[in-house]
Image (cartoon, rainbow, N blue to C red):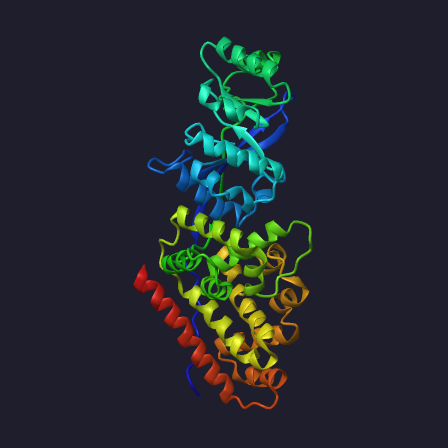
Length: 424
């Protein structure tokens, strides 16, 4: 009997970091959280990281995969965006009302930024101007933003004067003052008409950690190449995404975020790619490139997911392309619980897999579930069970069909993994 045993070594988890700092209202209850990029357990912005890199990594790792609602406990979120991110329409990867987009104090190209903000506001996006210093260059943006953030100055009377001037000119704009460190500063600013407050007097940024899987360098390169053409070949994008568990997870999460409350059920990677459309796919790839992910070599667990996916695709081909693509997705998703350190039930819900796919993943139900169970039986070298399951899936076939499909699937996993490592 051929040796088709697969050893699934769980990889060292990639730990990601993000900080959130609360923003309080006048009665000291939480109004929102500002989400801040971190690259280690040290609670400060990493030296040498550009605004663009921080934006890309925050979007790609945290917002797309974990979700804003989880990171902020369903409170309002404030997110810093670099100039390039704004001009590349990164906000369109989010629902309009899901976050307040902060224009950072280092923003350049103000004329183009102003045009983009005006356009995005028409679609319902909300903006804040961070660390406003009174410079005349910000004038075009002042009438467009919903929030203006000031820093406490010394003496505090300077902040009071600035705050009152802004209130007179823009009575509907909400003022947030940052870096409040004493009770006296809080009460003084509150009396001056400040709307919201942020600083160490209330709370330091809270560190959040979570496990993640990063896409490979080859996947990044291939996606950049195939989305740089005037007309995107969706089948090509689908093929690239399907070979990378990290990309698959984020694409599905992005579809979930973009679909809102439409109760969309995803049954294949190709469906997810087509649903997003050219603009969102290109924005997704820009985030991917900007974040400079894909630095680690893929793990044995990644190969296991690819092998399962391709085996299920081959075994379900007689049922048609749609069935085989659904099988591929189930196989790929079946390793995400180990990669992300999450329960499969939570994954099925988070990625809107629908009843059939969820039932297959969780309970081995239906044709998809039985095929996944067959895959697992082969991995465990349980050929008695595998033979019985084959009778359900393809009753007219001999066990040799399983040997051949697994051999091809293992070759597929090895080849994809080898091509990735060569480019790493």
